[in-house]
Image (cartoon, rainbow, N blue to C red; front, side, top):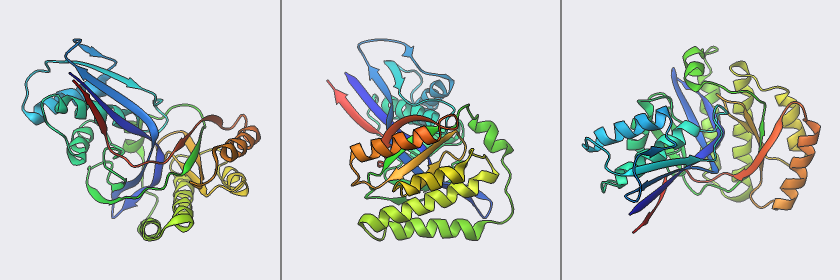
Length: 292
């Protein structure tokens, strides 16, 4: 028996802010994964860090099991400390795979509850794009029919300790109206189709990135936004509690065209941002394969 569970990374968040004092975000899951494999063909824990081990313990308690009788291995392609949901993906993959070994299929809400007990969580365990509180785990809404926007991911360098960041982050005055407007823009986007949907998502992401400069500044962000948009980008999204910045491209733009424009951006911002990779915006949620 082998159970393989994959949980996606994120390229930061489409939006992050606070409403009525409650922090929230709208997820931006991408096609990078943490993969947990549970098997009866090997024993022990392999590749599980502290948070993933805690997730395994909490999952067993949640499903009423005292001991884990299988082997488990965690592998990831998600860098840590960049705001790409590396810990959230590890926790989601491990929790889902471990529970599935005992015949339980955890919901996104159950996984989120396990994650929130360990640290603030990006909400990538929910399907679609999710509007969640990353500090309380509350799910406010989900958006389906996610457009496969291209994302050119750049890194400003360094690492951010997510837990320490949220403990120290303050609120810069009452911005409820501004964040309600951003959420309304996302609502509008998912009420329409095609290019207009994608344009509105780029607009919301860019405005949220700008607003986050007062909390965790990205170097030369405004110049990067202008440069990306001048090359046809829909906008820019950021890791609000991390180091990555992503240029958003229309889903129907060819890979070759994205490559060429990304290379231009990489050359223009050499020394400020290091190009990491290209991915696609996808629906969140854990995917699972079971092999006999």
